[in-house]
Amino acid sequence: MKGFCCNILLLTLISSGFPLKNKKTERSKPLCQLAAFLEGGTIPLRIDSGVISQDGDFLDCSQSEKEKCKNMVLNQAQQGTGNGNLTLIANDDEGYTIGDILCDKADSVEENVQNKEVRIYWRLCGESWQRTHFRMSQHLCCIDGLYVPCDKIKNYG
Image (cartoon, rainbow, N blue to C red; front, side, top):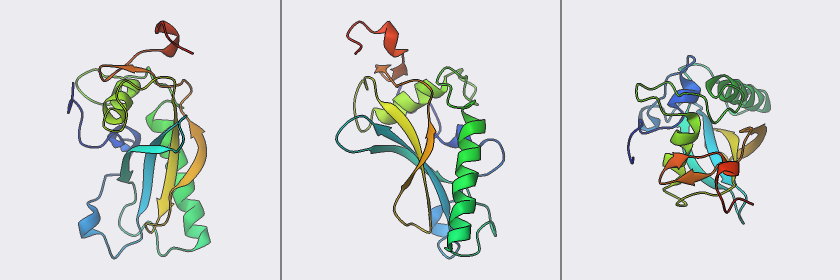
């Protein structure tokens, strides 16, 4: 199951129009980034992140540009996940769901995730990650790197 998806989960979130950029080639430009974090433990755990800005999207690191980045991230998260639907088939040729991709990514920080919330965060110019109000509509439960609805697992709760 490992590596079934591209290197970045957010390809699905970004597929509606914003290509990923390589950070090394874009250091001089303000970068707007989106990340998925697992919540439900002592600290949020980042499971994946990516750059969603295009050349010239952000002029500087001002408050107005931060608001623009946050709104862009929210829009991409809503569109790319069908408003947080873990059972939505991802934009890949394998037929995996958004939940499957999140489980595969989460496996690197916590194996067989049980009953965790997935929240979307944003940042501009490499500042600290900021939590949005967006979250996946169901909690994430994984078995062997694949999504399973939490209510289908015997030890749920």
